[in-house]
Image (cartoon, rainbow, N blue to C red):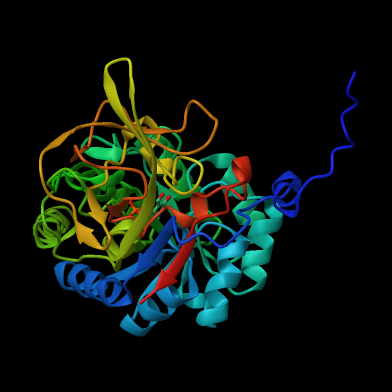
Length: 389
Ligand SMILES: Cc1ncc(COP(=O)(O)O)c(C=O)c1O
């Protein structure tokens, strides 16, 4: 009988046995590079397309400081969703009058915090939230959010947010009675492809303006929301087409006496500026289909591929050069041990047939809604890093 010697791991084995979150050495991928010049260009284009409309950047899309600095420099105001975002914004722009608190779901503490820090504009879509605001945000401008169908958008928001016209009329009347300046806001759904999506909510806005005027007040602001699309895998109208259609609808609905206008773009200002580089970990056949596994997934930033809602444009590279040659449909999946970590199964991006382990994919227009969606360390993978140029 031989007796096994006591196990004494080598330094290498010991390193791998240590429980830790994050990689054992700094990985080069996945990494998101955000081009600040493109952020500035995107702001200028949307600003030119929507003349006279104050652009409040939806900070949730990408709250990194260089992005906020660039947008501040271009003249952006802010749309925030939480006290955390208020703090981030005030660190780069100390004027709270330039902040709109667009989240319709707020803790009483958060409303009090915002008001104490000087925020004076809040959104609301139900009586219970209005009760809180009347109590905790005296004098603030209250924007009533009306629901939209979300038709034409890849990421609809109408189910969770917004109210019907009757409710909106009641909320506006209550807010006016309590001495608040009022406005109307809506969101036509994110990554919206239809330039006419603003027509219906603007027509509703006009009717609701009548309710407000009947009480001796008027709309202090109309907020056109976000929704302007990035350049993903599917073609979409350019920003000037959106601007022309929206400004025409504004003129038809609210002219000639148009109230002050604002919008809350997120994706359109930062998505196109971002390129996410990821490494191919495995290429295999499963049930007659070609699967490509990469080192970024649903849990490390690409949460918007949930339901394959947001479809990114993807290119393949080897040693920094584009891979050319014959392509084929693939299933694209992330690296974790979770079976939902599949990016695209129906949409089927086309990738080169000679793609192999170690090649890189560039996932384009990923500057919005990626880094902040990344988990803190699911399966031991580090959060998505962001660099700027
Ligand atoms: C209240 C609010 N405003 C603005 C935005 C930004 O939308 P988008 O990125 O589609 O422009 C969002 C996105 O979820 C939102 O919830």
